[in-house]
Length: 86
Image 1: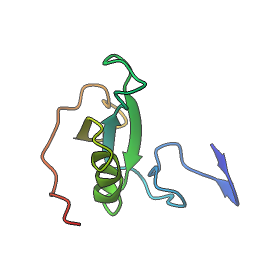
Image 2: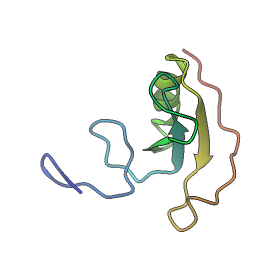
Image 3: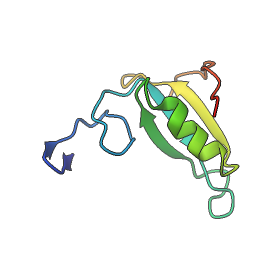
């Protein structure tokens, strides 16, 4: 994937400007425009997982955070993550 200033790794964090490898997968949807079958996915590094999930929770979107494993990303079970404190 190309980004401003060069190549961005495919499995990098979805936070703008971050190129760190993802450790978390954030699954979400906007229920006003997405049916239950349509799930969007953001990847997150350890530093930005709370920020990205809080952004979605603040909009009352259904959110699920799972550990990201590029080899088995579709089979990974949800794991608990630290609570976000605003």
